[in-house]
Structure formats: C-alpha cells, structure tokens
Length: 124
Image (cartoon, rainbow, N blue to C red; front, side, top):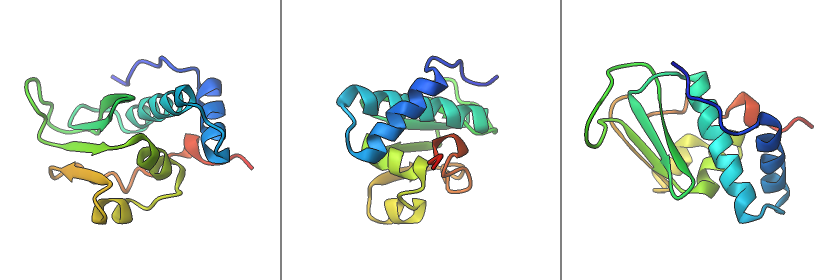
C-alpha cells in the first residue's frame, strides 16, 4: 500500500523550486522534504527500508521483508539539504555516502537506483 499523500504535489514542487533558487524558508524545506519522502514511498512502495530526514520526516519504502518493532534492519538517514540534493540530482548517492552525509545500513538501503526522483527534477 503506497504512503498516503499529505502534501499537495503542486505545493511540494513550489517548495522544491524555492530550495533550488536558494530562496526557501524553513517551512519550504520541510514541505519539499515531506513531498519527496511521500514521492519515494509512492515510487518504491514497501516497508523494508526506513528513510529518515530529521527533523522533517521519515517514511518506509522498498519492497521486501517488513519490520514491525524497533529499529528496522535497513535505514537511510540524512539531513534535509543532502536529501533534497539527492532527490533532485544535485548530489550523487555515492558521494554523499562516501563523505558521511548519508548513513545507510542494511542490504536494501542503497537508494541509488531510485534517485533522483522524477517528480523532483527541474521542469525547465
């Protein structure tokens, strides 16, 4: 079952545009992160990987064994700026992992095949 949408896609894309232009307020960054977390859960439905972008949000995605209690076996955690860079294609997954901006644990935690997100790409 895909994640329930809470962020209007038009509002999410506007927040992403503000982030790209460097004019985003904190609320824009939070909206952009939440929109893209909802998007990755829609693109890769499942509950085997938990993607955490504190303090903005978290989502479970990717098909595979589901966890029900405690820390999931597959976790990706990063900050909002790195996450938005990854989903828009401004930051490469391998670079972010190599320099410690992304912490990914578990055999399913490599999201490089899902990023950048189509919905987060620039529409120029």
